[in-house]
Image 1: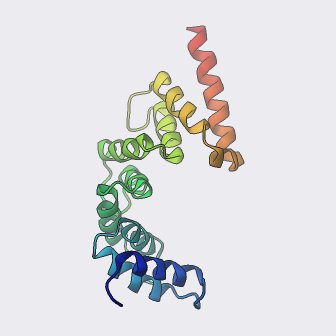
Image 2: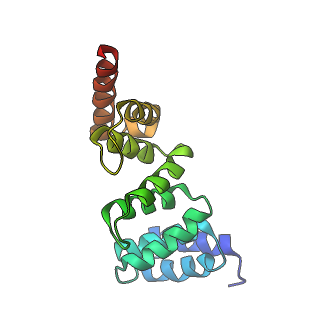
Length: 173
């Protein structure tokens, strides 16, 4: 109530997850919005996610993009990855491969494993970029170093298999 952005964001999280208060996504949105309007980047990401998923507000991709962009421009790695995905798929924005790569790369350079894995896949398949086995291997190799990715077996298997395939392909040439 006193305008402290971090406290407002934290209260939003409490309502979103039902921690110490009844779970209420509309109330979470209210507090995220207060903090987001003060420039709190994590609140901006959370508000964007609410609009993207239709939790506490009607689903609205363009509004989600607006908040993702605000957070991403402040360096929020998840918001950067979300913008990359949106530009890659055309959700809420016109499809734009250059913008997708730009935002994925910003997230990947901050050590975001899913952005690194996605860049590996894009270079491996030649989607949005020229097919480049060396870049694909480099991004997959970075992604493979993350413990969290190892815990998601299907993703980990894909990274591991493609990295091995690329390593073999590069040593044969």
